[in-house]
Length: 233
Image (cartoon, rainbow, N blue to C red):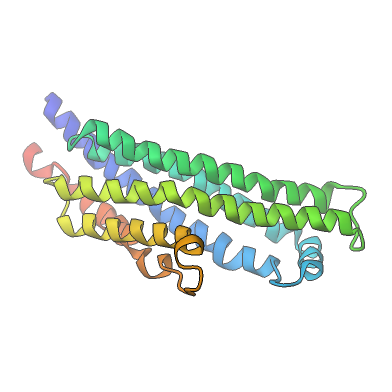
């Protein structure tokens, strides 16, 4: 097997690792973000939120672990996509990976706020449903989690935008996926900066553009097996 063939195999492996990791994330993240977390947080009522948290320890544990698994897989995806797009431009591909890693670090720091809530609610001997001081700490940590994570989405959007340009420049991934990734990245950017740029606009831009990375995931899983196949046969 030649060096060229080895590189082609690595591209296939990188594509499949990216695809499978993204697939796991597509399963894990929505359970945390769209099911577990909303069931624990009662909007507009701190008292009900604290009571709900105190009664659903297992659900809160699952929520934290799902977030954690997703963020860990973000690191793996950053690496595998770097390998996949390295032949296009090694330096820019590295930059793309670094943007996602920075996002992941910010997200993990944000997740520590939920860990702090967990310790207060289930580990503090002073915690009661009437302890207003601890309730305010819970509220501050919950707010910090979302605000810090959403700030990290700035770097995630940059990752997707630059990744999209690399895909467009590549000769082995269809251009349309690069365009979709750029649109997805712009959607995350607009959602993050909406409070500053469009304070009176009640639109979650990312909710309409998030599909780009998911469609790319399916291509990686379906077509990733064939990357370099023609040259190795």
